[in-house]
Length: 198
Image (cartoon, one colour):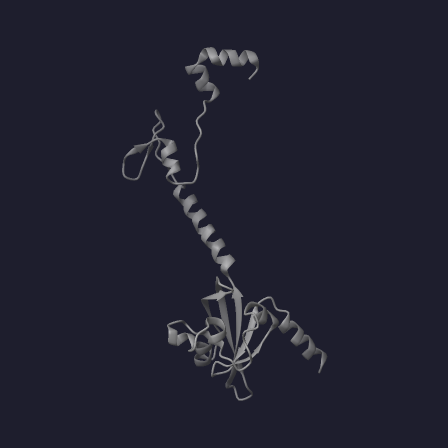
């Protein structure tokens, strides 16, 4: 075996995502080590890809799912889908990229599937979207009374600042008193605190 062939096999088996080579009849021709790790060695060459990934007896498209292998064979181009799979009783969302491999006559011989777990990315995106919504909620001009400091809500009613913010964010409020108000409302306590150096 040539060095480049050895390197190619080594790279294939050490990729951080699953790779499955599939023929036009949905038979698994080859897998890398990550595939064995994810699917716990339950696949064998010659078994069906949909049996491995979905534990089904018929192709994904017959079960109403978008099938990247079928699409790649039909369009002679790469495609991507996201499927929900179960690994060890755990629900996982995976991005599948299917890429056709052509023979010398430009006919598709195989499709190579790359399977990447995107569950953490989807959770992160959910958090980012939630944070963006929070920021947008408190963004812009907020009409506030110059005297009592109540805020006018979208429906025209006036609410305390605390109520307004607590319904639009996860902020919690604790009441205190600022030094200026302490002097105005409780001058004797303010004077005592000034003497004590507080």
